[in-house]
Length: 98
Image 1 (cartoon, helix red, strand yellow):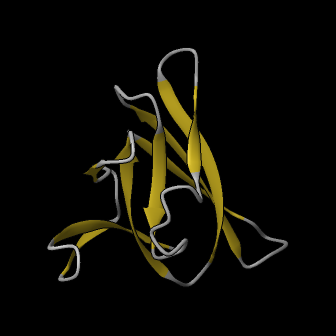
Image 2: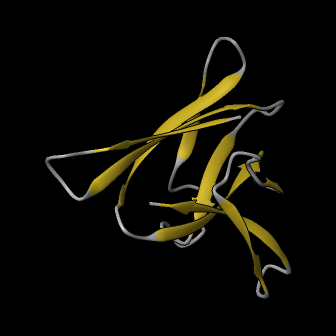
Image 3: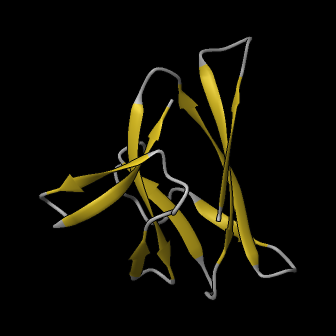
């Protein structure tokens, strides 16, 4: 799995690129930045089977997130900056520190 961060000099925004290998038909990234909405940030499936997408998130914040494969299988990214337990979900979420 790969997460890359590009901090923009012209705006207080960080461009996050997700490039995720997954055996799935659909993959989305969900988190507190999109109210955990499955349809808000779908990733595009590439010819090599990976999924890729970008988000622009405000710098100076931390964001909890997970991936959702085929609308039901939630999983974390091993390259998350850290992990935080969420009582509502009853599990740990990946964290992006920007």
